[in-house]
Length: 494
Image (cartoon, rainbow, N blue to C red; front, side, top):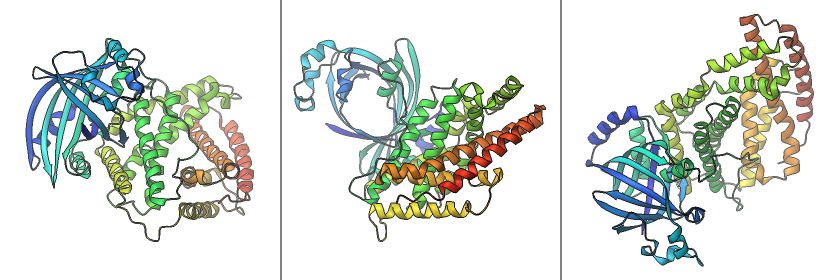
């Protein structure tokens, strides 16, 4: 058995030649040549192997055949770690009995599974490899270019894999970060096998569940809580990427996903800052991505106005014209190309790698926190600081205008994220009673931003809705003021 530990990155084809040049010229790099790999992935009709969390393939290369089975492993960020077993064979159909008996679940019917095996999909690609020594570690770098084939459907493969052959896992990150200075990429959470099952229609489409708070460790351990928050946000970020690729024709769904992606990024930045880990080289990467995501707020505001058949615009006499202008405004944002555009920024992949590095070093206990408190005390301190900041920005004795509310939007967003990160520690009833009015205010701020866009469109296209807008803003501000003053009086729950 080998324990495969690799880092997978997705790149775009226009960067292949430059990437090869970098790897050929990298210190202590030895090119290993290029070979064509043909791979058939096998399972039963009812996906018994997948239900056992196993992946089975037969690979052809250099007139040889090899069967491989990978058992349950873990993906942290883009680091894939799975035990695998390899056996040379002389036929294209795998023989399960050649694998060690101890890898199979107790009570299995291996003969029945063997008889039911069929090829579910294929992955065929050209692999060019390099061996690179870095410090005391040996890394194999593989550039895979080809395609996944399932039921006459094709999905391109364009991946860069860093596999640890000897040494320390940190070397994978170090080498990838060096390469990332020149070539843009994103972390690869989905393996070729996962993508193949998707393409073959043998697994559910990627989806993301709404969660009320991060699942924190039960032992009140602060470093483990940091790991949980970082892993949750980073994993959700990568999952959202996978979904965004498939919903290019659904603007409303894209709006929700982009909002959730930005939320993950902001949670990561906030958490690193709270733990004193927002290093000088990481903060500008967050700044760059935040600027690239500036379209998210306006997109969400426009979709808010158009949702439920534009019910919010029901009393406007020229509703159809206003809706068309909002749709034109959304189209001008080129939402369907935003993801590909952002991936072209080298800072995007650099940030993801820096976060994976921080996650791994946290899990390895390499960060020491001075006078480390219990988790509940630490969370209480963060909650109190967040609440005091909101109290100063929204004093109960002062009236707030539409502009005032929009100016505090990011601060309120951060405060809500603190509650999201540590909410599991507290009684749900008290927690939600406190948070609900602040979440309502956040929705009110989004609505005010939507009205601001409407006013701009009205001026540009003579929509003649200023009186309607004035009434809407006045009514909303009155309700928000009442909610804010009530919210500031709700007892704290920490």
